Length: 89
Image 1 (tube, rainbow, N blue to C red):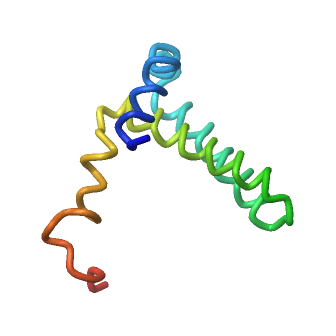
Image 2: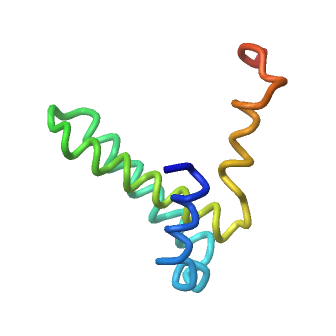
């Protein structure tokens, strides 16, 4: 599945409710999921890690949807033809 397909699936299922919640509230849910991922990474439970990665990805798509950001297009900065190594700091 492409990133755009997953983002679209999340949009169809949740975007109406997500827009009603707004960006600040949705961002808080996203951060909560990132915290759960951090806890999962510190454990030996691979199944939980996979679940938490999926949750973080879904909430990231939600934030992108309500912010009118196409994640696949945004990822062009890493996958486009002009990418050569890392950006200097």
